[in-house]
Length: 325
View 1 (cartoon, rainbow, N blue to C red):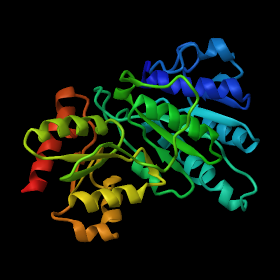
View 2 (tube, rainbow, N blue to C red):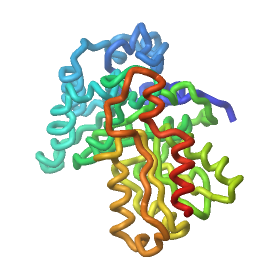
View 3 (cartoon, helix red, strand yellow):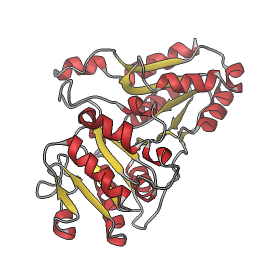
View 4 (spheres, rainbow, N blue to C red):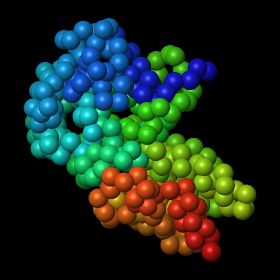
């Protein structure tokens, strides 16, 4: 099978949808001539023209609102916010408008909008360009939250997101854009709300998503030499959450390690832990649940300091060893 980068897979998903449905269009800052801050939309302006690849002013509040309005008129906008941190500028539009309109109007209208947001740290971009804000939005009913870890998942889940009649926040980790993986040429979708076991194991369930999936898989390879077997569960979708896959995995392994790049306090890991403790899986636990997350400090600009704040393979390995004691 051919290989694409994560960024190319996202572009292919958007391109396929725009070719088959004239109501699908892309809008955002620098997405046209420049091809997007991370080069994801390079060449799309030439294929679809400026009426369907819309360059916007530097006003997230304005263009996300315009996207919501177009979705209410039966179009299917894909809105790119340059950095997920900037979603705070249009927080009201996402949380009080997009998420709630279908409910407030008794289901008579829907908001089929996809908001793509590069997130995460690791580039030395400092505190206002390096956050992982996905947990903020999981507290809002009416929003679908997706965070794919591979090119294959990114293409299939983005097509599903564009086809969905609800607002979707699609988180793309910056450090994944250049990662390659096998991606079929054909059109395919993946189910929203279904986790994927990226590696089967017997000793510890590792619940994770996004870039952390790859660190966990690398840690699993190293720990296997010590006789410790990790089962890596890639959540893929945070809301709706595939609780059953997590629960069944923990019942099998008896231990749970949660890994995410967002800060520990208030991070999505707390919801995963609650899911297990409120289920029958609680009675299968052989040790307390462990979380390996970023420190509760703003992301520093210095790359060396940044390394000390973020979860690393070494920290994941240490957490797993602790669970086995």
